[in-house]
Length: 449
Image (cartoon, rainbow, N blue to C red; front, top):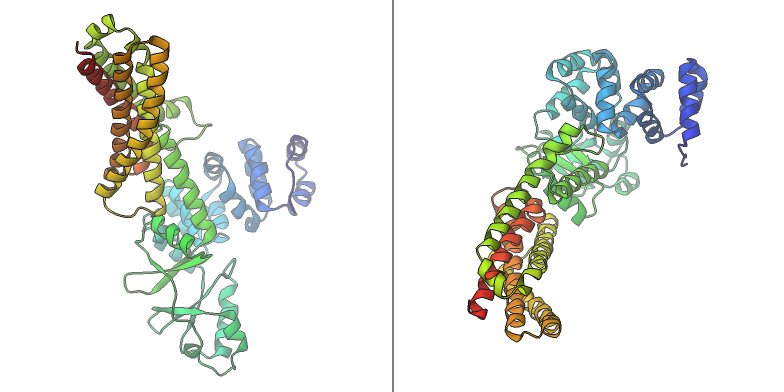
């Protein structure tokens, strides 16, 4: 059931905290979903937020903590003792607990680990910390249901009941051998319809999609999307089952990656949010603004070198913004398509074939746009040669921008650099400079100055 968090409701919560009416407050909050509690905590000041976290049972607040705004969560965690943080982590899945520990200073994280009562849970969390957070090992949780291929149906059901207590949601039942190597998966239907004495190795499905602990998160998301998987098992280098990745974890990963790519495309070099400090926002934005400034200076310098042509054909000056804008637009369009193709693993063929296709596409678009521009400039100014020069320049610039917009993200991806970098100011600035240079060189050659 959805619950609408209104301003009046928040004020009511704040009033109850102020008068320390914990019973009434607990009565109101205990029926709410953890996502609603997280939304409430985000609206409170630090003291009030900590009051809520300490008041409610860790089973609910642990999930609410994972839904909090990252900055608010950091502030709340810093206000809790290592023992209190450990109590929250004991109620979390291992992957979420590992994410929380990664946000803490090393000395505090070690204290928290020492305070976790369940030693196996603590060991599982620590084991996850050794993996890159953007790999399958860093995304997986240890909680899963596994059965041995040598068990009977009766023994399997008994073991599953015991294991399922620690698993929030059972997506799949995985089958392993005596060495814990992944053998396949078990259908619940086959389990329920088989005789009690039937060995599991006679009914399990040997075909199962899996990833290794070192598989990049992008590849994990591609596999799960391609095969519509709600969960995927993770194996180590010896093909032993070590964890699973669920759809909610991969959706969070995709969302975070999309946000990073969007910021890169917007010319923001660091992961920042609207509520960050002015200094942090400046540090994230300034590098690309400096690049844009240098690009503008470069374009101005190029225009200065063609001052003579301006004096005799001033109309060329008025079309400079148009040429620069078209170069930037075409470059961004081309790079955006390539970046999307890389992200979805849809690109086929070699770089050479992609460039040839982009040239043909740019030529078609360029011819149409050049004819339209020629018609306008000739009607407006009546200068045939000048109109031809401007139109041919636009045609050449479109081809150049398409090639740059295609080649740069492909080259970046091949060198292991995020290709989303190519959809932002980098492409726009470079295409502006090259576009203006090509424009005036072609105009000068055709007009004959």
